[in-house]
Image (cartoon, rainbow, N blue to C red; front, side):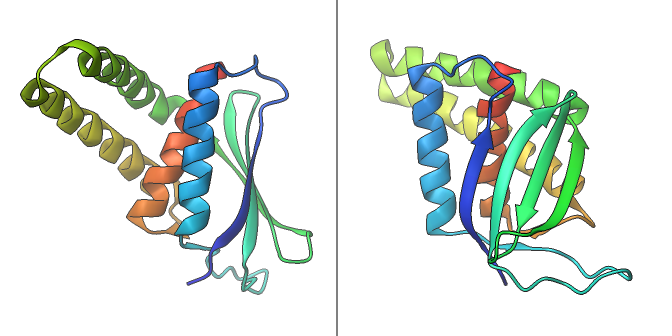
Length: 159
């Protein structure tokens, strides 16, 4: 399966990220570039570009934009996803992350572990929604979807 070799975030229309958000972004991009799968599906009107690909994520006109370029830098795909299906899970994810960060400072490990399990569950739900939304547009595995969901969260934070 093909993969992503570069990922960028176009946040030019968003407020500057906080240091915490910037750190989340850097970690997610690093993890994605270390291990990912990303393939464009066959279409009747075009050949399937083999990749590898570069991806720019942006929010434009209240839509999540995936801008995909091939190895030579030419755009090979662009698709827009409604943010609506992500709103609640992103909100839930940020709330549980805040609880987790607070818990790490003052709660015993057993309670931290319970909050972390809930955080992972919400994160998995976001990744599942992303997989559904990408159906027919791009083929990714669950780990890639999880990491892309993290980037959606940090993008959505400023939207």
